[in-house]
Image (tube, rainbow, N blue to C red; front, side, top):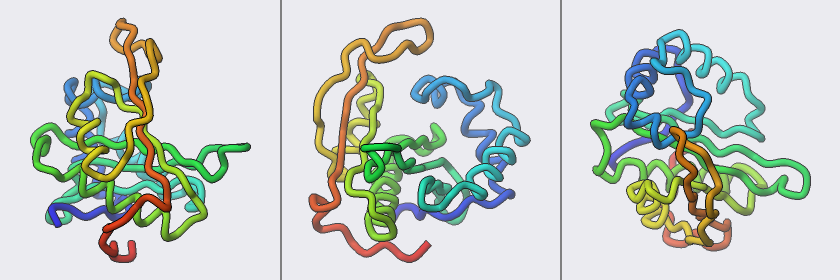
Length: 179
């Protein structure tokens, strides 16, 4: 195992700020995050995630040697999609390309499927973010299609890809320790 996901701790705020104050990281995320991202922003986020409804928001730090190096979360949708959840994640740039995010994706999906009634987890990476798409594929997600001209990021109209993992499709997943 290259990483472990765990509940957020307030002491993670500095690492969170360092990872998110990188334009290369933020260019692959949705808008709305402050830039630069401060430790106070990190503390506010952590407090918000720790107080969220644990059956609606599954939010964890991605760690290596217990050091927070990224974030991963699964967020339940509403109404007729109440057993569907969206996956979001990022990792500090210095950890890119090491398979860490693939492992974190596997861990959170196994946890959510085991601990909730969620039957489908989906992700919508930018089509240009081939590393994110590959991490999803290696974690067992199926490519479902391209959402054409689906977003505006940094002034450009861009495509996104739709990936999903169904509860019954996860096979060969190893047991993930209790979080």
